[in-house]
Length: 203
Image (cartoon, rainbow, N blue to C red; front, top):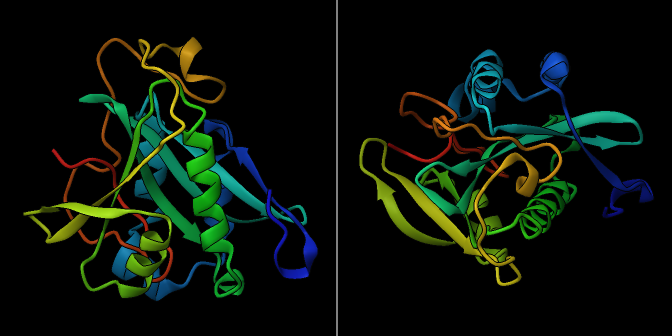
């Protein structure tokens, strides 16, 4: 937890599939949604379909102010992806994006076998790229279909690799024998205006 504006700490809670609609009440910037995030209904559908997808709500003083999605890369057990990350517009510009990203890295640092975290960001989204650079994310590739940058951050404190099972993934995570689904089935611009979002690993 990190106290920022007003001294209140940010609280992170996994939102169950039965309560996912709560994020539809967030006061998101329409321009950011249209240009980068995409329809919330698509995000919620992807989380419902993804057996290992977890949507984490971000609360401030008991109010839901944002969310992000985490899921493992079905092709590489040592890599996890930061999915859609969104922050309500009244709470942008106060350092919460940086705090949330730090919490994401801390959370993934406790996942057995996780060595790297990846995300996608639009090449012209300079604010998001500066934020990620401050957290040691570096460009490792380009998604040819959209021109989005693939950014990666190593997790030095990752635990030794072990087989990914619901037990070893920890509370809030699950997997099945058929592999993990991507966050979104189609390419498109999904890098947030400031803090960044992405749709999961490209095909």
